Length: 166
Image 1 (tube, helix red, strand yellow):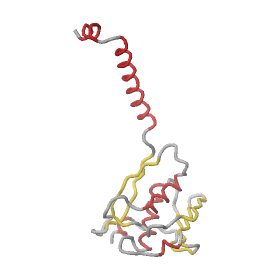
Image 2 (cartoon, helix red, strand yellow; image 1 turned 60 degrees about the vertical axis):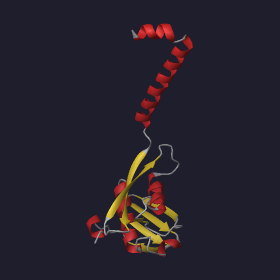
Image 3 (cartoon, one colour; image 1 turned 180 degrees about the horizontal axis):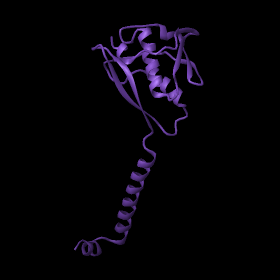
């Protein structure tokens, strides 16, 4: 019955057009499943309203020119996208460099990182959250040393996430 309808009421051009659209649809679904939107990262930030930690999801495009280390640090410095979460450091803070050696990473932040206000975590908690995020998101990292304007601020010891919420 349906084939009879197609034979009778749809021209050759429309048949080709429908075939092309269906093929494109299946091709795009296949490529999306194969490639995906990128690599998924889950970041932890502090809440402004509650004494607890919350997560946000970010995606790194598969063709990104950034390394995984650079992407994680850049996204942490950009801060949360959710309205009532605290940024780790003040807006404008930049990573002057980050250097990875074995299972350690060294991050030097601009001087803006030392300035705090009510919308940012205090410096010690910000460093601990940065450490927690980097350790969780970048495979093989056990030690994170953070510098602000060339001065070591936070050593290599990690704290547990439960201790951060206190």
